[in-house]
Length: 65
Image 1 (cartoon, helix red, strand yellow):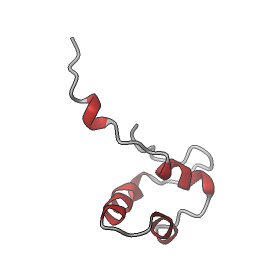
Image 2 (image 1 turned 180 degrees about the vertical axis):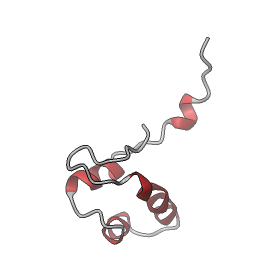
Image 3 (image 1 turned 90 degrees about the vertical axis):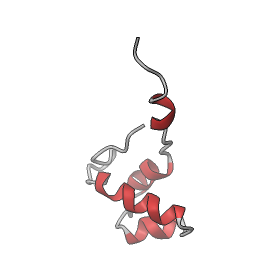
């Protein structure tokens, strides 16, 4: 799944925040605190980030025939 540009629930632009979120969470910060600091207050926006599974590395292993 690729992070959508806008939240599917409320329409707020969130795509530009994912790289910062990912970098800070991998550095060891609390995911909830990071989302709050990035301005993701609504549960629908938070759900997009929490439910994201980065499948792109697995998908790119397969070539189209």
